[in-house]
Length: 357
Ligand code: SF4
Picture 1 (tube, rainbow, N blue to C red):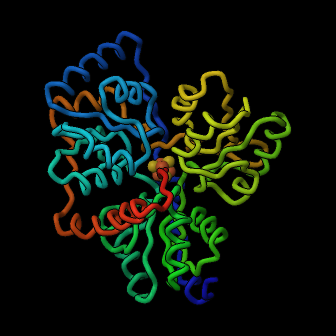
Picture 2 (picture 1 turned 180 degrees about the vertical axis):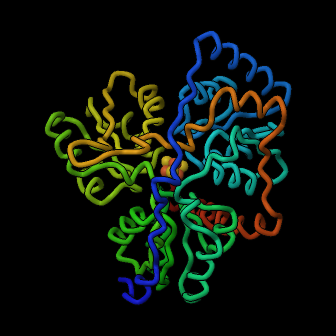
């Protein structure tokens, strides 16, 4: 359990609403969309480039990635994809830390992104200077960070984990007698702490999308759909996690809807995932977990404002101009590779590993 003095030094690192952009989804006519998709396919070939898209991006981008031999996945697998692909350029449709992780694991490739302003509230809520200060104050704690962090924060860490691997890694560290600094997601940190009993000093950041899911409204929705199974991403608040039939990563949620017998699912994660859910189990019904209702309002309303910055128009521009390239300081890149590789080696030793946000 935490030491009270240590916990009291942690501030609230959740992003205030005024710093969260509006979620703006590009609107195009069918003709405009088709023309852009054709142009993007041509440009991908010309540039020997592969499209790597996250499950939370627009369905058109996911379809394009699948149709052109790219990949649609969680952030760790997106970064891995570079090893499987001969493409010289990876175009990462996601948020900045995903582009950075792709670069860290594939330094020889050019990594582009449609919009470099596509950030993440967890990454923004964990500034390297303040995080480093906390680590310096607790030199005997092992530093474990979630994938949703900057390259600089990863470079300061001992381990990087994903939501699918965090419990296994923390259990392993606990059995070695290690105490932990965890960053940046406080809900995921609490969930891991509860499941492992490890001594964790937990950074107080949050995902602006998952934090908005509401326990009270979820209870009401479950009454309307009594046969629905509730699938929850562990970046959600405890009141939502408590009601889950399954708590899992994005990849785990997609796998579950294929395997489980239920016909209806209430899903608490970014609604961009519904494209893959519907594709994976077309005969099943998917219902968004509530982010607002009688007792609440939402700002992101189950769709990440930064993921929504990835549009067909920006993707075509990036490919045509080579703009928005990701660069990571070589020294940071070398150091950030260590905690990522540690996770990969851990999984190769036969430990279970699954995807992330
Ligand atoms: S959904 Fe949340 S965790 Fe994922 S990129 Fe957006 S803000 Fe970050």
